[in-house]
Image (tube, rainbow, N blue to C red; front, side, top):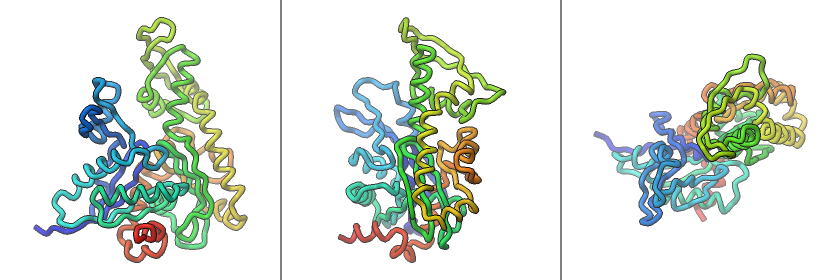
Length: 342
């Protein structure tokens, strides 16, 4: 058997981590969560196994989300999580891989350095950073190598990235901490206010996925949710319909729409004309909510195209970079390379 390195692209998201391996494609998709014994510091579970333990563990076991708003918030836990996941993929390789990690365009210099160091400590030979918006545009199939503007709206778990991409780079962007997690919190607050019922974030996420909608509709879907009654403290069930969820999501949706408008207002007129012709690229898990493309179209008057696989689009785009990683070192991802060489 031949043992050789396979370069890796990682979409390090707030709620999920997706790994693309050169020559194989998407090989790993796990929640970005780890379970740790806080007394001993021992890492117990990573990814889906750790997520299943949320809210069901003894006091000495805690679940940690080491990535917040698209950047590392707990360095040690991120390193241990990445090391575990990389070892699953490269267990038979004699060489350390080169890794591309997708990051938000608003990332600071300190956060860049932390991401690079975490990747190297986790087992990478070299680490390169790639803006998530650029990766999403590549993953959608858009040709961003030309002086032609494309507007990407990436609604992830912790952040929404709105960026104008042209000539393999970001021209104008806005990153806000309103995304899938904010949608879940809005649903929890709405049901608490309207029904005096407290539900968990996981229940809210399931509700968002099953009957979530951005618009009030005539044909409503109904879902039964269970939680704790705030008046009696006892378990209680309540029925929630599509219009309830649409009303709950209105405030975070308005924030995202305002961010899109701000980016368009700051974009050069020539590129705005390109965007009007090319349309808006909509991706990320938050884009899967019914009516998301329609509400953005109503706000901007620009055609909106939702990508086929919104969850893995960014990872696929970063994976495309792996084939020409040597050629691109002086191009799109040279910033990470320069920082790494210091």
